[in-house]
Length: 275
Image (cartoon, rainbow, N blue to C red; front, side):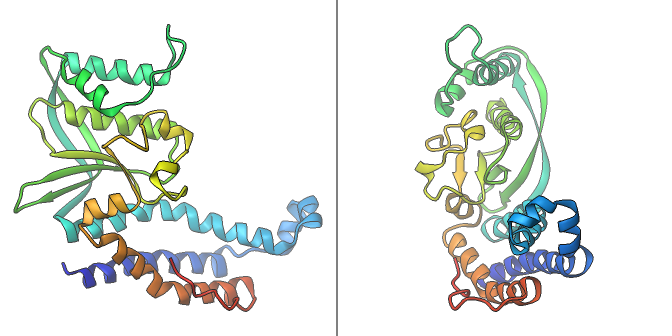
């Protein structure tokens, strides 16, 4: 797959989502000022309808977009690796002592126990401790969000891909999966990552969402990829820039439709500014 084809496929995924959203907010589930005023008379008396109309659109846009990230990642992976699957089950064996230590580490990250503070996440030290565990082999299955493979180099990578602000339970499950993958006696993947598609805080060193920070050192753990790090890893050098270009090329038309058809206003002069 060439980069131009990848851009086209990225645009197709986004266009499919945006077309569904536009049909929903314009036809199937429009914002009705009369209904809003009847249900929330105090809000309607204090705040202009346009504010809640924007919120109405946002909810119907953000929720389905959570499922689109995996589609976009699959497009990038086809370009970077050639083979990609979602919800892939990876099977192997893990020594009993390693499984025990995985539970121990997760428990210490979640609870204080006898210590004054919970354990602070540190991927390298945790993994070293876990790999020192011994005992009989126990069959283990891990289902990862995204699995990619390069048939030429035989490189195999698993990704746990979550929304940029994941909750604690999601992150704990992902960490357990990653630890089990790395603890397998016969490695089934070369690497496994906890990945976020973009960083709402800007720079990686500024990422402060508390829930994933409970389980990973989001700024320093080598198994954590955020934003452009993730896109370059799964799709290769230039993927993130291609992603931005793909979005920018189609953004103006959708912004124009949202301003005129949904909000019923003319767009500001700088509305075409992209990512």
